[in-house]
Image 1: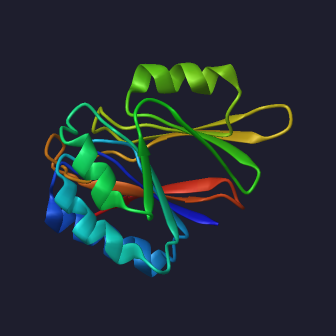
Image 2: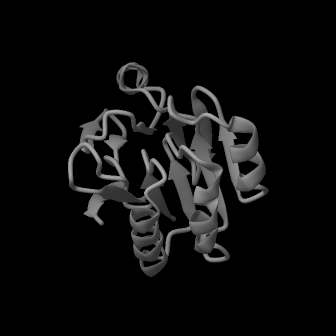
Length: 168
């Protein structure tokens, strides 16, 4: 299973279109958004991942103001929640949140195979090998690219437990 990971889109529709195009070409099955959509209209682009990408999961970020309309526009395609999202896909425990301090704590706990976060706009991909398995902590950077001038996203392969940060 391939997962497209995106964060801090901040209404940058041109870069969201680029991410959607890359994700569609890569054949992702699931989308994860680590917060800061900003406006509900971003789903006009994110919905173009369907039907190939069957499901999306997301958390709210500090810049997501209209949570009601964001949730409505996400529809049945995307589940969005406040705080820490905990999901299990292909037997892997995944935690998604917006803030890095919480992400680091969850990663150190060893409870999750994969920890995903956003907020800093700085990409990060670290692996930790435990006694029985590899674990990943990942910040895909910012899709908007406003603070770094280098918009990025990520693709995670659950079967291989590998990830790549991609430039948009």
